[in-house]
Length: 143
Image (cartoon, rainbow, N blue to C red):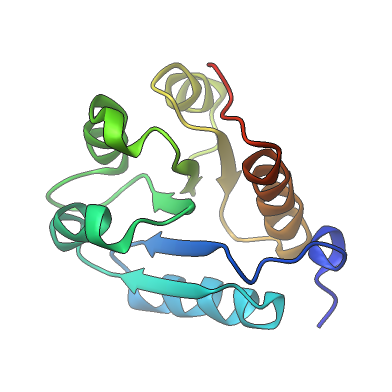
């Protein structure tokens, strides 16, 4: 598989958490990420379980669905961004909703990027590469 923008980046020290209530979505993204060589990729289909586990998982990148039962993506994002100990996590919102207002809302709440479904692998790799580059550069976007 052509991993595009990630082909020249060493991701062996980068961990990713995927949160989506639909199992096929987490499996698909997980499969797309396999050839990249991340340290670990953890998948959750329950947003409450993911939120409870995120401090232990300590991911570098969080791929977060917007529309989920229980704790939706925006509430999850808010909880993570309110906890200063998780400032280092790069958050990419993933949603079937592509309206500009939702993208702006996510950015205003502290999301680092926004990716629409259905997932385009090339865009996924590009967005993750951008976040990995910032991680390796030592910074987080000040939104």
